[in-house]
Image (tube, rainbow, N blue to C red):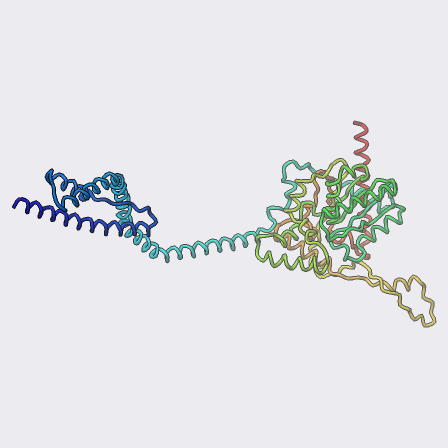
Length: 500
């Protein structure tokens, strides 16, 4: 009876162990498959209950076991003992893996609702964010338009006369009284310009397309027996480009004649001449005896600055129009205009200093804004027609009459345009000008300034009318007075240097 119970107990224990092993094999297989799918290293699972079961089996059986069940139990105990020795670390790794995986799963389970709440919050705030973005873009757009309008209205208000306010600029001297004395002597027939110099006249902007630019002044000096030339430069080129050409022109004149050169530049021509002396002073200091700038925008001009200023209303469209006119029609360089703006002039003057070792004279005037001038046409030049035979009808016609019949006066409303522009600048900025150049911007620091109390526009010095009042001086006499003053300054400076 006791043997039967013992055998029944063994059988029950064997069946239970086999069932537990079957369940463990299923779990182990599913776990290995799951870890392989997740990319993890498969671990060998073993059960503590499984090991304990086999240990109980060996301890509960008696010392003498016979039959088939005895051998089966011994093999099982031996195998379980081996598995227990082998899988001890696997059990530890298994436990560690469970303790590392379970918290992450729990954490993901807890954070998933948070992600859902965050996503719902983002969806709810999207319309508000879009509204705020639209409001911000509208504010930026309004601020940009406001700044453009303000910049357009301000114009050159902060730039006019900057030369007088810039630190380190030498002061100017007033030479108007001496100029008027020399002008009075010249009108009385006293001419004192020496022939020991070569006088080089430098034309201004668009002079290549203007008829007889400075030709009258050249003829006037040539009749006096003076060596006078008009510089053949591309007036619509940049300042630095013309500076190089003037340097070569001066060197050719000096080495050809052996005489120093006196420069007289009108409008942009004065800027080009000053740039040549600033950039190449070491090469020209022994070849140039003086420089006179007549109505030159040395500090810049508001007319061109207001047209080409960036950041104002219609700046891109205006620039395209100017590029079309200057580059396509006139075949010039847009830099010729840019170099006369306040921004470019400040940059150039601060970078390249004009030497004060030679006499400098700067001349500026004020245009008339009378209502009568606004409706006048200026006789600025003569256009010579090809030779045409004239019918004499039996009467004698002199050759001078025939020659004069070939010349047709060119009438352009230059005075009216200058008067209108001067009126505009006066009303907008409250400053005096000759129609293109402000009086304060034409005063070169360290120079002798001539401020005649005469209503002369920017074109008068180049194209003065033939019907001048005999009581008033003409443009050629004004040129001579300026050059005479420049020569006197040169003599004074040389005398002072000799005394020192």
